[in-house]
Amino acid sequence: MNNEQQILQKVLERYDLSGAKTQLLGSLWNRVYRVEAKNGHLYSLRLCPPTIQDKRSVEDELVWLELIISQQHVGVPCPVRNQQQKLITVVSTAEGARLSCLFEWVEGEPALKYLTPSVMRQIGRAVATLHEISRKFGRPFHENDFRNSYRYDSSLAISHREWIVEHHAEIGMENVTLLHTAVTWLLEELRRIGETSDNFGLIHADLHFENFLVRDGEVSVIDFDQLGRGHYLYDLAILIVELFDEPEDYAERWHNFKAGYQQVAALPFGEESEMNPFIVAVNLAFLDWVYNSPNPAVHKQIGQRIPATFASIRERIGL
Picture 1: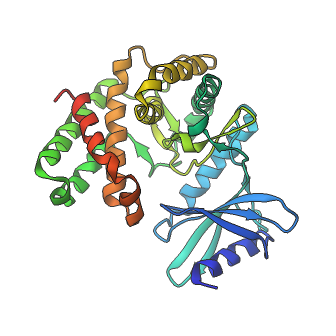
Picture 2: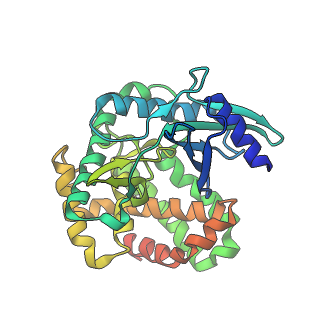
C-alpha cells in the first residue's frame, strides 16, 4: 500500500467506510475517487492536494451545496458528513494536513456527448436556477468572507500580470504584449460594467460540459470547487468558449441554452457583444491554469488549445 492509498484509507475510516472499493477518476488538481461501500452504496470522494489548506473555504462550498439542495430545483452533489458530523475530514500526513470531503454519487454521463436541444435547454434552466439562488440568498454571504479567496473580478484580472511576467520566455514577447493589453482592456470593461445584485454574485465558475451529467434525459451539475464571486456572465462565457469548439453546432446549441435559461430568469445580457469581456476573462483564467499548474499532465493534455486561446483574446479586444 503506497502513501496515497494509506491516506485514502484513513479518510474512509472517518466515514465508517473501511474496506470500500475505490477507483481514481481524476487527478489534474484534486484527486477524485469513486467509492463503493460494502453494501453497494456509491460515493464520490475528493482528496485535496497538500497546497489546499483553507478549510473554511472548502467548507463554504459544501454549505452552499446544502443550500442549493434545500431548494430542490437542480440536482447537485450532496455532501456527506463524517462520523463526527463534520463536512471536512482532515488527516495528518508527512506532507502536512490533507483535506477531503465526501459526496453522494451522482449518476450520469458527461453532457458533452449528449448536447441535444432538450439537454441544452435543461443546462440553461440549471444555470439560471443557480444564478437565481445566488440572487435570492447570496447577499448575507457577501457580507462576510464567504469564498472570498475565489474571486472572478478585477482582482483576478490584475493578478494575471504576475504569471505573464514570470512565464514571459515560454509565452513569447508578442503574446506577452497581447496579454498585458488584454488585462488593461478587461479592467476597463469591468469598471464600466460594475457590480450589482443583478449581475454579480456567487457563481459556479467551472461550467464545462463535463461538469453537467445527463441521466435519462435529466441534467445535474457537479464540481463546485471553483465556487466564488463573479459576474453571472462569467459562467455563461465558460459555456460559450466550449461551444466554440464545434462551430457547426454553436448557433443551435447557444439558442437552446438561452431558451432554457429564459424559462427561469431573464438573460443577464442584452447584446451578444456584452459577453466579450467575460470570454477574455475566461481565456486569461485558462492560460493562468495551464502555465501555473504544478501538474505536467495539464499542459500535455490541453496545451494544444493555447494558440486558439491567444487568437480568441486578440479578436475580442479588437487587435
